[in-house]
Image (cartoon, rainbow over all chains, first blue to last red; front, side, top):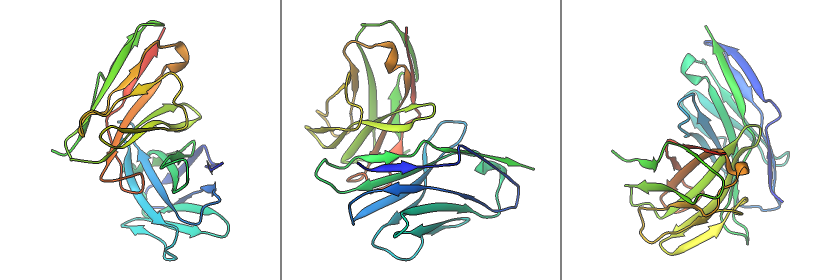
Length: 116
Length: 113
């Protein structure tokens, strides 16, 4: 079975500082995708960043970057220069191509608070 | 404006009373999906659809039905709701599949008494 684990239910950071959110996953597939989604208080889910497993280079989107360690099955999200608008719940998600179809598996989420 | 819409946004109902939550997207996306979000459990996929007339079960399909008669619409049907289906529901769509960026609707808060 495929699983996604986010071991930090809550994290906090000060404005302008850097924070890293952890995610580990398990899959027997060699071809898969990993995602970080953000859910602010408005509840709207927004894609933050996407990583294809066959790509060795870590994905980056402005202040957001990932540390993808395929052998360790780790996919952490780094937020640099944190802003108040980054306060949200962050979900790590895994999609792999398997016989069962195209299910997307989410972790339980990490709530990030940002203080000024 | 490109968007995914869901209706209703909030619903309180009673056990056993059939209900439908509608989902519509205006982006001509092939892939649509339903998730439920529960505290401490994250999001879990209920059903998804790769195209018109093609639907498949996700992780938690029991007690739910879906249909995909048109590309833009993907309603979620609860034939006989029970209190354990009280949850926050999200519809999402993407161009072709779960590897593409998924665009989520605003969510439907359902309470079953």
